Length: 144
Image 1 (cartoon, rainbow, N blue to C red):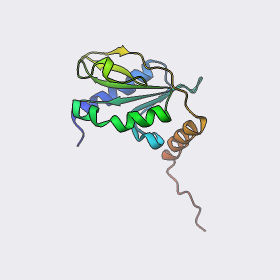
Image 2: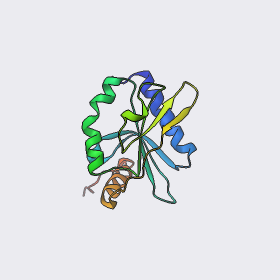
Image 3: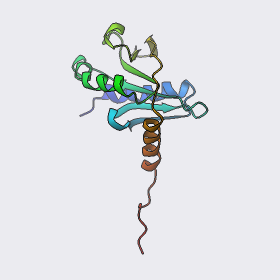
Image 4: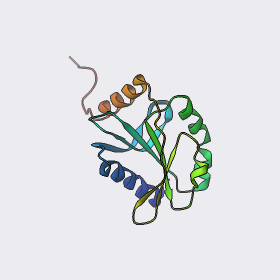
């Protein structure tokens, strides 16, 4: 079961994306083989995407090792960040493909800038199509 702290940080992650000019930000976005991102945003003018993964415990962060391996192979967004309570994860722990944001009960602080990751257009299209399909509330097949 998801903790209240995890829910709060997911919401803060989406607010952070919107404040950075990302016109669309969603919680729990399916990102293809990468799994479900806690917060996902896209800038419509540049089509630049950013993912925020929330971690509220060391155990959860350490269990994410396999996902970090998949990110190196085929990134699901141009930037990927971990977001955690201040001090839980140190910048040198997140690896070369990730950035780090700390939340100090008032605001988010960027502790490590995420590098630019080249996203394959097919990956981006699958994520965007999934996003659009999720909003359709009519059946896919017409009935006669």
